[in-house]
Image (cartoon, rainbow, N blue to C red; front, side, top):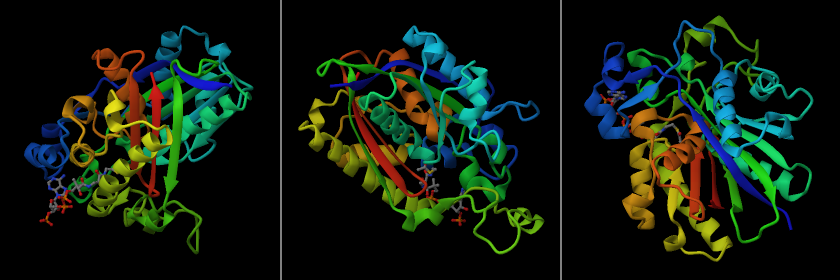
Length: 335
Ligand code: ACO
């Protein structure tokens, strides 16, 4: 039997810190409102006048993950890239990352599952490794949200939530059925809610051109969200999908050593923890410092938890995410 195992992790956050009071200078908001509703104190944004793309952040995280795994980039068989803020509309950001790593020729697959992208990517990597097709896969979640936000009062409900950042994992084949490995992944989607959290334009779904001045003027190229609906569904689906993963592995909540959830909103994670009855010290959050970095939150969480001494070899880790689509997913990992 072949299993997959996370053998290296890395995170890269751009150095520029944007605090809630910095946002207060460009839109009508307050530190108190943001902290109370979301738990966020600051986030990172790339310098807006510098040509830095999502693949550049991904590259930095990937280099750290490769060094952590103690392997050369040349050993990687495939790249899986999760992002909703690509370098360009096409080709995928994985294709921009690949030559930066000197890996021309290997497959580079982009996936568009937004906040759930990392766990969907982990599941895809797991299937390729279990089938014996590939031995080492680089999985990256990275976002530059700061260029796509409406940074005025009209966009404040969304602009205050998001940050830039990247996280990466090297996933490798193992034959050890009891050691460090991905136990299982569980994926879901319900497209009936696709328009509750989305960017409408550009797109092919309209009469007329792919993009127009009118659509830009209406702000359709900015993310739009029904925050209350997202909150309700996220706090229901995340506990559900964690329990699904535990049941599939005949494990109990008390067997889990650490929960590394997607970082959309601290209040969502508090609600999830409360519903599951998880003690606070078993949930690792980074949202206070980095905001919501969408596809990057979970690998950043792994890296930061290791750095903080909270995530150690042998631990049972549960991860879950919810996001646009709606999509939701979980994974259980023996670290
Ligand atoms: N600063 C100050 N006031 C604000 C801001 C802001 N940044 N944004 C909105 N407001 C105002 C609104 O205009 C509104 O004012 P009004 O009462 O005069 O009309 C008031 O605050 C309340 O707005 P609501 O939208 O009702 O605020 P709510 O309590 O729902 O909180 C929030 C908004 C935090 C987005 C909440 O709905 C939420 O957490 N939703 C979950 C969605 C989420 O976290 N998404 C992240 C991305 S998706 C993902 O990763 C899963």
